[in-house]
Length: 250
Image 1: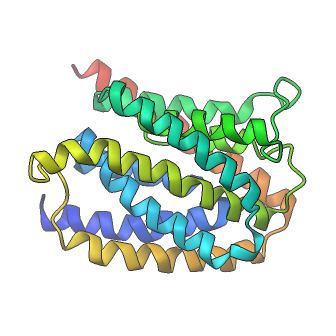
Image 2 (image 1 turned 135 degrees about the horizontal axis):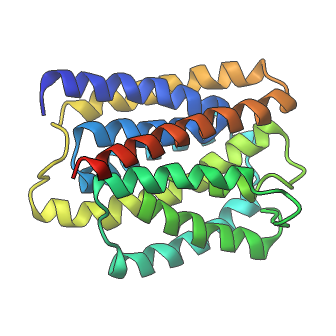
């Protein structure tokens, strides 16, 4: 990896962590796509997982008084089940397929609420959320829009939504690091960024998360939900165009 690519990853880690600090999911989606520009697919899962693990973990710590821990505990059980199953069947997608999956995932945001009566505050649905979101994370690399569906009908405030989603995503990203990281460790880290990227990107992810929290505090609940949907959808459309170009270039 070139020096410019490393600097690009570090800067992207800060910007996308700030976005995640505001919307709870847009940053992770953008970060995954940016990483895929400069790294092999398997390495994107590990790198994205590590950076998002820190960003989400730090966001959960910053907003810990808003976390709905009962949801997180049940979600964690579902996430463990999905991680155990996917460890045996995970298949690495091509880069074109990766962008296609990431773009398609954003379409979940536009499913009419009347079609799905999902509520993460219900234990059974929190468990289903852990299984499905972690499973999609291990396939497409991102699952924020799917996770969001489970929170649309909750009575949680924007702070509780961001904090609780951050805590749950710690488990999904940890699963990515474990499932995709183990084979790369056997290959001595082939395809991963140089070591110096992580000690620089990780604190910047934490700083970005703090900046996002400040912006979130100035936003109301209506604008929070409207803007998050628009940002994620625009990113998804870009990925679909990108996927089409990669398929046609074959």
